[in-house]
Image 1 (tube, rainbow, N blue to C red):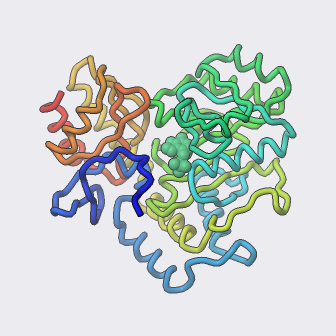
Image 2: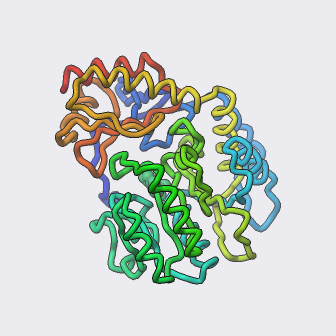
Image 3: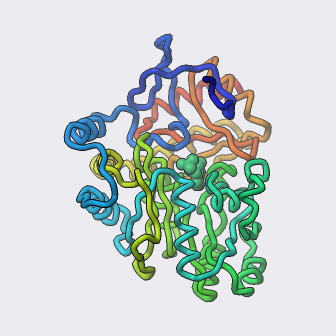
Length: 374
Ligand code: PLP
C-alpha cells in the first residue's frame, strides 16, 4: 500500500527531538521555530511530560466515556484555574477541527439556528462545518458547501450587524489572532463590538484558540487581551504537546444534555495525562511570562533588519512580513541553516511558532541565518 499523497514534503526525516531541536536520521540538529505547527508548547521530550505519560501508560491508557474517568475533571479544574476560565465546562475531543465542529454544534443546538459568520483569511479546520467556515475554497468539498456561512471582512461591524439582524445566525467564529491566514489581528473596538452584537442578537461568540491558546500569546488565551467573555472557546495544538487532544470550553450559561456531543477517544487517560503535564509545566516554568520576554527580544532583533520587515503577532505566535513570497526563504533556512519556520496563506509572512521554552540563543541563531538569506 502507498500513502494517499496529500502533503508536499520537505526532504527531512526527524527521528528524535529534544527541547527546541529536532534531529534527523543523519544526526543533524534542526532548530524548531515551527513547533510542528504550533503544537510543541513545553518543548520536545520534556522530562515531566514523558514521566507522566509513561506512568499513565503503565496504569491505564484508554477506556470509554461510558465510565468514570477522574483525570478529566482534574484537567478541567487545573485548566480553569490556570486560564482564569473557571466559568466554563470542558468537553474533550481529539483535534482542532473537531473542537470547532463541536463548538458550532453547541451554538446551533443552543440557538436552534444554523448560519455561521466567519472572517476572511480564517482557518478553522477541515471537518464539515469547520471547513465551511474557513476562507479557502480549495479545501471545501461540495458536501461541505451545504453549510450557511457568511464570510465577513475582519473589522467590518456594519456588515456584521446587517447579517446578525436577519435572525438566522447561531455563531460568530473568530481567531483573535489569525494563524494560518498570516497573523492579522483587528482592534479592541472591533472585538468589543462583535461581542456586544452577539449578545444583542443572541448569537454565540466562539473564540477559536486552537493555535493561540495554552499560553502561546503570553496570555493563556489571545482573547484575554480584551475584556470579552466568549460563549465558547476551542482548544487543541499546544494542549497535548504532540499528543492528539482537543477541547471545547462551553460557558456555564449553556446547558449540556446527555448525548448532545460524544466521541470515542476524546478525554482518554493518555490525553488527560499529556494535558495535565502541559498545564503543570506552563505554570511551574512560567512559560506565559517567558513568551512575552522572548517576544520583546525577538522584536528587538527584528527591528535591526530594517523597515522592509514587519513583525506581526503576539507572544510566541509571531510572523515576519518580508514583503515577498517566503517559500524559497523557508527552504534556504531548512537546507542551509537547519531551521524550521512556517508559511501562511499570506505568502509574504514567515511564521515563527517555537516551543514556549525557546531562548534568546535560539533567536540569535535564527536572526544570524536570516540576515545571510535576506
Ligand atoms: N483552528 C485553528 C486556528 C488552526 O490553526 C487549526 C490548524 O491549523 C485548526 C483550527 C484545525 O486544527 P486541526 O488541524 O488539529 O484539526
